[in-house]
Length: 388
Image (cartoon, rainbow, N blue to C red; front, side, top):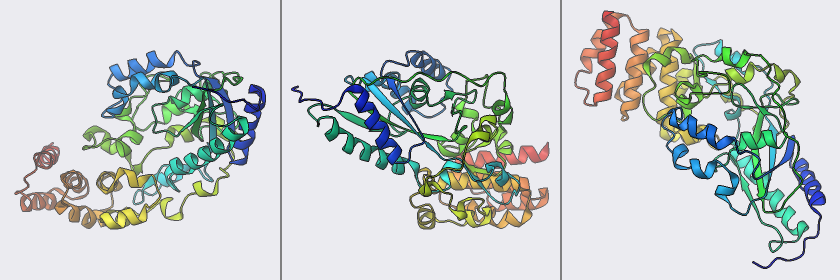
């Protein structure tokens, strides 16, 4: 491929990239060489071999490409890693206090960050390429989360922070509240120094996990993680984990919020990431009444929309079962006749937690004609629990 002249030195090109990133509102930035994370592939492969990815089938399917930026794009030489501060204006765990309301992860309370960050990255790329020399002189690709790129190890290599004991990125200046994006290029840009681990002996994030999803520091078992269970997991939530979820209906911020480095974080500046008031602590009763059209309308432009009504209301029903509030019985009972068996099964569990044995037995008899085997299994499980 013929190349045209490059108008900027590598040092000047890097400075220009940083200037463009600051104009787009990014709070942290750094350059990593494409070969900066050789340790990431063995860790990823062991994690997958342990089955800790749960039913995220795309993880083993993309493991080879994910293990190194060069496996995804052979020409890549440098990766600009960018962080956008989404620090909340309150402790997100405050939403756990009222069991009749749902707790939604901070990042999902406003607009979808994927679209927001992707737009910023595309604008950076469109302004960077002509300044450096045009498409004959440089190629760039932008990535936000969904591509097989190991953003957290690359961000650590680029000096944005370090992967803490909870496996998420931690920054000296922003704590655990950075959303990541990447601009990869075939230019060799001067890399930044990697950040060192500053967790020390702190266990705050590990001890904060409601479901004990960390078998060891720096290791997470997605199968026990509430974020995975409420967002990625497609089937019934394991029975033993349901009571531990409380009223967390989309994601979980407990390990992030517990990080002591958050004391240096400021409230995120990006207005479009600001929480919508209706998503701060929505009433479970209101959410349980959402049909498909109402769900799509309420969560328009929200990452919650991608999970879909069925999985989201499954989470709501688990929270209803954990609420201890008999006033929510009608909401769960109505979903016993929903078209989707996942919701009918979750409704059975919720009602078994809220009703006295006699009322639950009458309800069970009224639904003796249930045809789905998994829902029938929920009725049997509830009966066994009642007998015990």
